[in-house]
Image 1 (cartoon, rainbow, N blue to C red):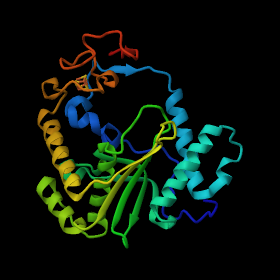
Image 2: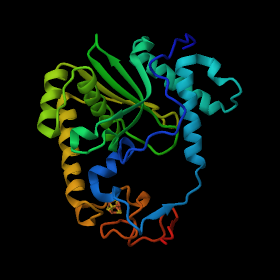
Image 3: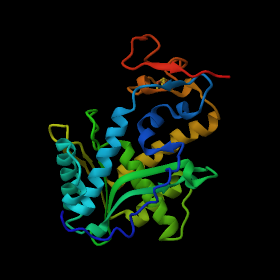
Image 4: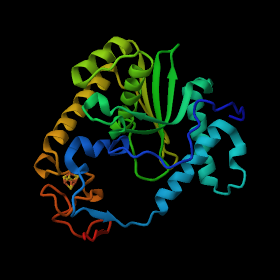
Length: 282
Ligand code: SF4
């Protein structure tokens, strides 16, 4: 861990991050309610204090620096819990990469909009926390750091989304091919990655079992492609927010459509866990 190496391929400029409409962090809700992502004048504004998000950002930054720079990342840091979590994250990435740091890519931006009929590639995409790309072991393993209490299982489609985005980015940049939509993408995955291994790991220090891994098969990745295409087709066909396509789900309480959607679990329960203010529409 203390073996700092050059981060030549992983540095990102410190400018504001590009925004993707369909991103990994929205994946679970997108698959359940594809059109919830359309902006609507009656959307609710999330006015919850941003303390947790800021803490999560600092924890992520520390964990990433700990992986690359070892204990020197902790200079000036007094948050013991954050340091312990960062060490665990760094150790996990080292173990996943079998000690070959060059095979680990952190905080990379991946996009794939053009493979699903969007004009802009970055309409669909996002940043993954870490990806082990090991050609010799034929391995793609995505890892994600969660510093909060909200339990996230390694089967989350968020990480499958990043694996797929990486596969499609490699299709364009490494293999010079452009598979479009479900069948071509599935065929590409089977042809190029049929004998590869995949992994999804969540490192969540506040959980009793803090490191959890799922190893999706090629079929699981292809199933995700199909589910993603189904949701994308609903999103594109609707062209606007349409609650007839939605299903009540565990994310209703975080949803900006919570009070206008006929399917919302919140409609009958105004005393929800969080308060939102309705945005003033001029
Ligand atoms: S309120 Fe619930 S059902 Fe309606 S769009 Fe949002 S997440 Fe979907």
